[in-house]
Figure (cartoon, rainbow, N blue to C red):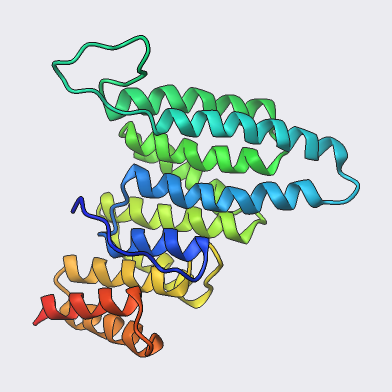
Length: 242
């Protein structure tokens, strides 16, 4: 996966996050998944806190969201070089798997302690992320599917995008394509149409389906006549297909 980052869409927070992921291959990095999910958690927490008459659940969600922020910081903890020794004043992990397992315990504690909160759904999403990072694809699929079936369409769409990425990783392209098509037809604030289009086009391109990829990139350019990052990405990708 390429390490560089490009300019992100400036229309809103969700677009800025999702276009960065869509520009890459269908294999998300942990950093992109975390950023996207944290954008979605803002929606989750706000909706929970303004719900009239649900004082108890709101307080529970407030506590859960605090715990969630701590767990997410664990996922953001740096990895140390193989020859380095742990430093007491500078937390680090020896591997992605070690970090994922540490964070997984924290996310599971949120699900167990605050099972009826919306933040618990977000924690379950991260359980899927950490399971995937630990190499447990079956558990990751289970968690992503559970979140995808929740009533919160914003959070559900984030989980669907992660599920599609997991399917690509495990060579289940047909299932990934079906999810991308669904997200294209039913976009949300957290997963825009162009995000799903670019992810699907990347999959087609990697799968030696240049005609299908070209069609999607051309559609992105057509839908964004004023230019912008999405159109620039599509133009670059079209040049690669020549």
